[in-house]
Image (cartoon, rainbow, N blue to C red; front, side, top):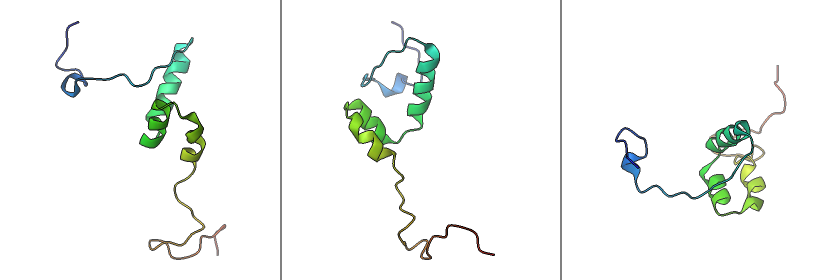
Length: 82
């Protein structure tokens, strides 16, 4: 197999395959790949480690809008005032 110096992974060798799944339909595979690209590193790591049970917790919002913080000390409002 000839390696092309213009390939993205050429300077990132060795490349290690850490996750593989198969699809019957190429469009399902493309959709899955696009979905994974938008995931956080923690979610991707859970998939690699075959810990699918972690995904629901990793999918929750990381910010709790009901808590005060130094950047937004005011209470969150459910509607616009005016």
